[in-house]
Image (cartoon, rainbow, N blue to C red; front, side, top):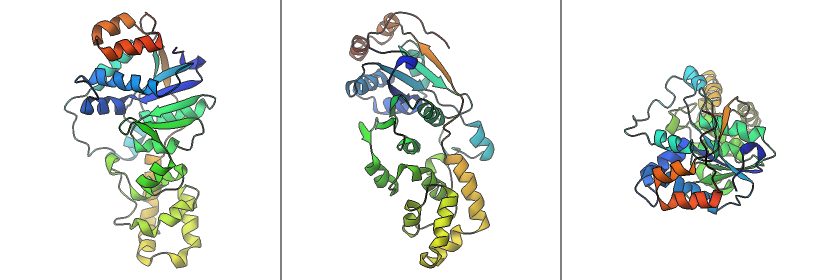
Length: 290
């Protein structure tokens, strides 16, 4: 039976925006993006022990801090022709769950902050966003990719980034940039094989990376050294670090929803919803909060 977040030991935490778009584009096993979203919820419950479990859906907002630092942040992304999130959010508010958000921060930072604050809870974080690889080292976090339909482990981190530790993900993105967020690398045409050994042998911070480089000056490719060991690259390094590093102590709002099974039955009227309510013992009642 689902419990309130404050009473739960195990938490399914959904990056709502990420999963909503995945559900919209894939339609999972049905043709409706809302049904597809909840079918994914059911699937995740089937894969986890949901005794004393709660569900938290984290809403995404634009990061005012990152946009102030870099106005072009995510500026290359095309305009959304159809946004499935309002429909999903409307339904989630009638579901027995918790909803968390910060109007000035992205879902990634809110999720990291919640998991860091509640170290006594076990979280399954549902997202395909590789920015959340930064949470892979949290002892109380398991990452689940809804596109691959499986847990993400350190082998995925090595396959995707060539990294041997979760704590190096932010540094990797700082150095090489992130095209999905329109973040440029600290220098053009950096050859990764020339610096990856030094990334993997540092402490995951820009200062630690520079210390390793200085210790290995005689081994580093001269062109690579000139590209990354200069004032411009140092400035970009500091800026990129602030853009990619997840916040883990940010404020957020969290509201509990009691659930309304009658409304869900009428609105959805599908097998997935019926299965979901049967499994979780949803209670009748309106949303408690905003």
